[in-house]
Each structure stands twice: as C-alpha cells, then as structure tokens.
Picture 1 (tube, rainbow, N blue to C red):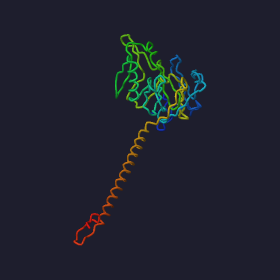
Picture 2: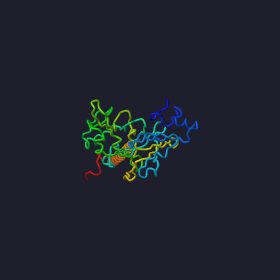
Picture 3: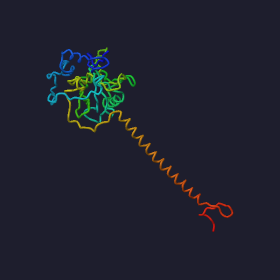
Picture 4: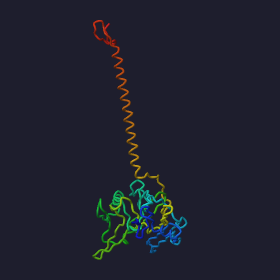
Length: 309
C-alpha cells in the first residue's frame, strides 16, 4: 500500500510501493512538473487551494518581500518516506532565551493531515515550563509517555490571544517562520455551553520527531518539489533574526562521546607507558646494583658501596 502524507496521499515516491499520485499524473501527461502547491485554509479567510504540476502565483502571500522572494526551499531529509526537513530552533517571541528546542538539529515532518504541532517530550516539557512561568491560567493534562495538551478553562481564545506571543521556527538558514496565537489557540465549546481555549501544540508518543501540521501550514504557501526533493515555503518569514552558529546534528553527541573516550584511553595508555618505563628503570638499577655484589674472601656477599675498609 502506498504511504500517504495528508488526506490525498502526497508522500514522495516509494520504490517498494510503486508510483505516487503525482508521478502517475505526469506519466499520463496530465502535468509537466512533479510539484504540488498547497495553501491551507488561512486565518485571513482564504480557502484551501491545491495546484498539481507547479504552483499558482496568485496564491503567493503578499507579506513584505515574500512575493519577491517566492519560495524558500529546504532539503527533504527523508525523501523516500515522508516530507520533512531539519529544524535548528523553536522559540517564542523571537527570543532564543525562550527556546524549547533540543539544542540539536532536529528532524521535522511536514504533514498536511495533522491539525496540531506535535512535539517530542523533551521539547514539550520546555514549552510547558514556559507556559507555567508566563501563563499560569493555562492547565495541562496528560503526561509522559502517552499524551499531554494544555488549555484555558472558561474562556474563548479570542479573549486571551493578545496575551500570547508568536512562536518562531527556524530551519537551516536565518529566516524565522512565525506561528501566531490565532493559529495555535483554538476555541472549543463545552457541553454546558461554556468555552475552552485549547493550545494546539501538544505532546504525543505517536511520533518521536516534530510534526508541523495545519497550524503551521495555514500561514504559508507550501510547495512540495518531488523532482528536487525539496520543500518550499512562501509567506511571513523574517530574515533579520540573528544568525546562530551551526548546530550539530543529534548523532553528534555520539561522536563527541567517542572522541572523549578516545582521549581518556590515550591519556591512560600514556600514563601506563610512563609507569612501565619507571619500573623498567628501577629494575635495571636494582640489577646493576646486584651486579656490583661480589664474593669476599670468606665467601660473604658484600655491597661495594657499603663495604667496610
């Protein structure tokens, strides 16, 4: 069965399962390019649009410089299975002091089917700690290792959104992609006629990677480029954010540990060599000392250094 990505099956081609929907369309001369442009239902009321075989220029966002820049592309790291790329950082209100990333380049899946942003436990715990410090009215239920989500009881999101900040995602360059509170705070009416404001950034054990779902994609025009194995985003991206030093990939921890262990082994080996040399020198000294012993006339062994005259 063909892997699916989203509700219509946008996953990259899978050699084991045959052609994707897009490849089949091209083979039948229905499109010229292996590209799909997706614009989700946006907070400005724009209806969802999808273009097969490229993208529609009229769907480009009109944020300053966004239309001139077109799409900013990122490599699809797992192109034979699903759409995804590397995330360098996630933080709140453009401040790296409010970061809730893992400290490494982290894989993020881009999924048109998921309504949330899904975080691994390590990231979600940092985000929840931030909420506890700055928004004590938000209650979180559930816990590791299954599921956790936060909400505000008795209020609609419209009444509290102004107290919340943008969440910024940075991939592998200096652009910051924003998720406004209007996207990640969603109102739900309760059974008794009241309101509950849900935070759509959640933790679930279903995935060990970050998943960027609808609440991210509704802010950007996204181009899935099958031919070049890249994902392009067009929209509200800030290019003036401070450029940080490149972060090592997560498996760099293993490399660092190996290097440290290697250094320790080398130091211990060097110390062992020094000790062995000292023992050999001491043994040689004792042997030389022994050789200085000779038989006196009475047959007694006497050391020359201490021989009485």
